[in-house]
Structures are given as C-alpha cells and as structure tokens.
Image (cartoon, rainbow, N blue to C red; front, top):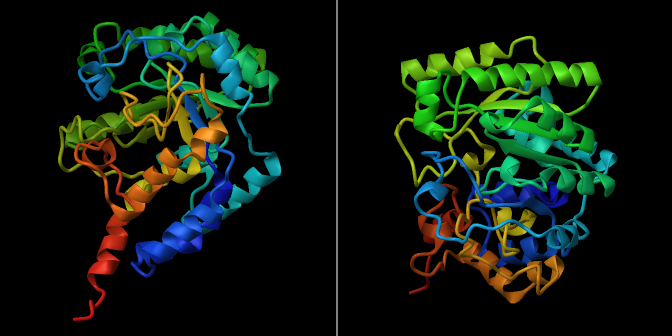
Length: 366
C-alpha cells in the first residue's frame, strides 16, 4: 500500500510541477511538510528464492544478493509497524481518483489495479516466488489477524487448488497470476522450464470454482505483461482477456516493468499513471527486502539503496533518517551520484526533470 493522503494532498502541487511552475525550494518544503512521518509499507519480500528464470526480471541475470527468507520474528516486527487505510478514507481516495483521473474499479485496467487494489493491500512478493516460501500461509494469517489486507503475485505453475484454498482461508485479499503467453512453448521461453499454460489455466479455473463453492472473497487477478505490440501480440492480449469473460476475476494487461533491462519492442507504450508524471515512491512508501534491508521501491533488485535494516532500526527511524532525506533531495535536485540506480537503471521519470526545465527558462542576472 502507499500513502493515499500524501497522494491527494500534493495533487495541486503536482499540477504545478508538471507545468514547470514551481521552484526547487518550494517543492522540497511542501513535499517534506506533507510527507507522513510514519511510513506506509508498499511490499515485504518474504523470500528472494525463485524457481523461475523470467526474461523480463533482472533477478535472472543481475541479482547478486544471497538467497534468503525473512525470519518469522522479523516479519512479525515489520507488520507490527504497518499502517492500514480505513474504509472511509479509501472511499474518499477512490472518489478522488475517479474525479481526477476518471479511473474506476470496474475498468479492469493497470491503473485501476494500482489505485483500487495496491493502495489498500500490503504486497507479499518481491524478487522471489511467494509460493516457494513455506511460511507464506502463516504470514498471510498473521496479517489478517492484525487487520492488514494482503496480496501477492505468483506464477500459476506453482499453485494448486489446495494451496489457493489455504491462502483464501487465511484471508488473502488478492491472488494474482502472471500469464504471459497462451501456449506451453511460448510461456517456457518467457518464464523458464517450470512454466506451463495448459495445466496452469485449468488450475486457475478450478480455483475460481473452489472460491465460489466456499464463498471466499479473495480477488483472483490473471495478468498478462505486454512484452510486444505487434499484430500477433495484440491479438494474444485480446484472446487472453476473452479467456476470462464471464468469470469472477480481475483480468488485465499491464505495462512492462524494468524496461531498461528488457526491451523487445521500442513501440511499447507505458500506460501506468507514472508515465505521465514522476516517481513518488520516496515520499509515499517503502519496501522491505528478504534480509531486512529497507529500500525505496520494488525495483531495487539488489538492495543497493538500503537506508537501514529492520533488525537494527524501526521503520519510522529509517524513514525519517538522513539517508532517506538525502535520497528525496536527489529526486528533486537531480544530483544523483554516478552509477545510481534511480538515474541509470529505472524507467520512471524523476521529479527533477520538470524542475530542470523550469530552471532552464529562468533569466540569470548578468
């Protein structure tokens, strides 16, 4: 989840930033004043172990971190510090999103998923496969016991109806399945030798039937990543959505993440709302990795931007620490050091790019 109060409170400031009509000093002052001093947790990577070799994931060839799984005691410490949004606040946020962006839950789009589902749920995946984590059922239950809604994305080759039922019984809010091709050969080329389509599709249908029979409320979200936009791929995307017509699912096609790492089609268009603005992660949420390192977002595959570790510090102390404040300042000023991931290995536009344009128009006294 992320800080929806900050998102709404900065709306008018954001308009001025996007119109290059605000100074660096004002942005830094306003963003810091509106930032919540108690952080929201976007996601917890319970494990970075994975049995897949996905072509679009930098984990496959770049990740150098040791493979580990978050200890139960550490997980409990993390979620005990988690904030949640109450229903009244969420309804207000969703009305704001509808009025400002025209996005509703019924649209079944990438942005609808972000605003209506991600905003509400603590994500329990990172650069690992959640179903490889033997404690995942207990982790979901622990969050449910604290009133924390949860969701994670997995590869359907790893799910069974029995596992899905255990997760739903534990209170999982959303179970998302990543499906990137509609036949076994193609999906193995994308996700690796353990991936399959025919069996996975049948299992998901069985999970949908089980959910209905048992009366569970878990949202099932089949998702296809748009890796290409040629005619064959466009038809596949339509065929994918047609598979779920009339079924109780939230099916959508999403933009590709990590495009700096894997880009097969230059004509691809990022449809995420962030494509029309700038990265807000430094102010809206943090991520906890499997070894306890706290990083600014889900794209830090090697935890190179760690601002502290939950074994040594509270999330609040890390969030308000000098390292994090300097990181936010970098996003505003653009003074990233050479080799910095945000500057060189990230798809999202940075806030400073709009301020740079504004400053370039200013007349310097001579």
